[in-house]
Structures are given as C-alpha cells and as structure tokens.
Length: 430
Image (cartoon, rainbow, N blue to C red; front, side, top):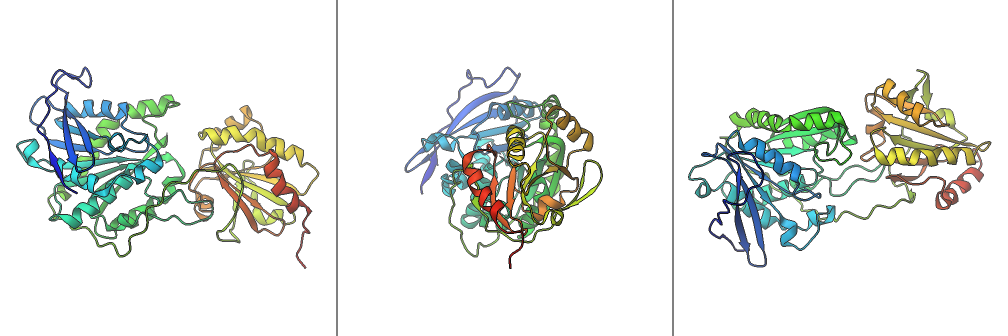
C-alpha cells in the first residue's frame, strides 16, 4: 500500500486553543485509496518530544487536544490522526477494528521521521481505551516491515486489548499482537474498573517479547475519567493533573528508549473480530462451573453461595459508580418482591468499594436482597467479570445456567420466562 507525505500545509492562523505558543498545522498521509489527515499541535520553539495520539472508539476528543495544549508548554508536540474520517465511519468499537494496519504503521513511521522536525525526537504513542488495539497492530506491522525500533515508547490509558468484551465466565482473548510488542510501555489504569483486576495478566502478555512495563493505578476514578460527561468533582480534579502525569510516565521510560527493539513473531494470526452488539437478554452460560463465592455481608457475616442450595440465585456484580448498575437496581428489587415466598434469592457483589460508600448508596437506594463485599477483587477474578454490571442465573443445584453483562430491567417478561422453569425444577437431581 503506497503512501507519501504532501508538503506541510501551514495553517498558522488556525489555532487549536488560546494557549500562547501552541498552534496547529496540518499534514496529509496519502494512501492509494484514501487520504488521512494529521493535525499537529506544535510548540513555540523546537520540540523536545512528539506524541502520536491514536483515536479510540470515542474519536478525536477535545479533552485530549486540551492536554496537548498543556504539554506544548513543556516543548512536547502532539499529532492527532483521524482514521475514521478517512474511512467515512463514525467512531465506534467496530470502526476501530476496520483501520488498516498499514495506515497505523505508516503514521508511526512518519511520526518518527526526523524530516518533520529537523531533528530526531523521542516519540510516544498515546493510546486510550480501544485505541490500544490500533497501537499494538500498527507497531507489530511496522516492526515486521522496517528496521528495529528505538526512541519509541507506548502509553496506554485504560487499555482495552480484548478481541471482544468477554462474556461472563469466559476467559479473555487478547489480540495476538499484544504478546509480540517489544517497547517501553506505561499503563495508566483507573481503579474503579473491572479491568484493574486484569493488569497483572495484561502486563504478562506485554512482557512476553521483552517489553518493559510500568503500571500506574489511578485511585478513586472511573474509566474515561478525563472525558466523562458525568465526571465527578474528584475526577475533574485528577484530570487537571493528567498532563503532568503523562510527562512523568514519559520520563520514567527515557532510559529505556535508546535500545533497539525487535517485535516478536506472531505464531498464528487470529481473525479480527468485530465488537458484537450487546444484548439485554440472558444468554446460555458456556463457562466454567462450580465457581466458589465466599464473601462478607455488610454486617460482617460470612456468606457462601453454597448456603443457597435449593434456591435459584441471581448473582449480580455491581458498583455505585456504574450508571447501568444503579439503573437496574430498582428492577432487581421488584423482581425479588415479585418472587417472594418462592425459592429465589438475589446476591449483589460490590466491586471493592469502602463499606461507608456502599452503605451511603444503599441508604439512598434501599434494596431487599443481600449486598456482599469483595474488597480484594477475588470474586471478580474467579467469576471472570470483565464488565459491569455482570449477572449470573444459578439453578437450585448450584449450576450456572444463564449470564448477562450489561444493565437490564430484571422484572421484564423475557427474564421471568427463564427464571420460572428453574424455580419449578426439583431441589435435587435423582
């Protein structure tokens, strides 16, 4: 796939922001079948480093451009590329999958080209959310086509490197390129996310071919904290410090940048899976059975799933900061009331929040079923919970029959049609 750079289209009168010294120019990466535009937030003097911001499933964000304006004050140039515009696609999870690897690799190569700054600059790829997938695909493709990479780092923000969001109880399948990456890699992960419990596994995948991995857990914030419409006051305050945190992450990688890096080989190329449309209906469960659950109630009493043998159990994983979780709670209470005096129970496992926060939420949103605490995330890991809310429907013998990730209205007829037959089954199988 041939590509070439058109000359720099200087747009000195076009300003990204009112920050003194930070201005934008535009460049075009021309392919046989499309033109990809790159907008550059430049510094007032010679740049000291360059950032290549890859667009996530949320597109090119103004919040990220604001960060670039702040970083420009420290001599850090930023490039923003919009692949979706060139593909005539709206930014979505499935649109990310459709970006050609050749485009990403060519963009990385161009960002590393000293011709565009009159000097060789250290370059970092910034990849938030599912843009992490673009980064690993483009890096491995680039590593296969060109000489060893050096003076190149990678920063992942709340990375999603799964082929698709795993269904409840199923193991995660990573893009095959993840284990082939060999770079200094920084991970900035929000604490209030099920993915924070997968950091060790992700780091292991990235280290497979030699990557040096540095993990930063950002406490008390949710995924997408720096651009959420419903950002809390604390999240907004943390966002104000994000540019400084990115600079510190870059500095941490500096001593690792000069090393020549060779990407690992891909033994088997998995097909690119498009993100499937999510359903709000219970689906037949295909994962591992006989999963343990032993946690404490809010009263400090031990609760085990085995205590509920002979009852149908709806096991729900939730958090107070998860809007779909909050939305579905009243319908769960209605379902419990509808099935009162029947062999049925709901257990709601909270994701590692402090007990006062859980109690404050329940004081405002009372429920009629037990709430359990999972401060160490043991149940989240054992039950393979990758998204919130996630729910399992368990029969009287303790067998997991159905599962669903995502919020729903639990007292709707379609759910009752699956629950009622389980309530009619015998307590013991002869």
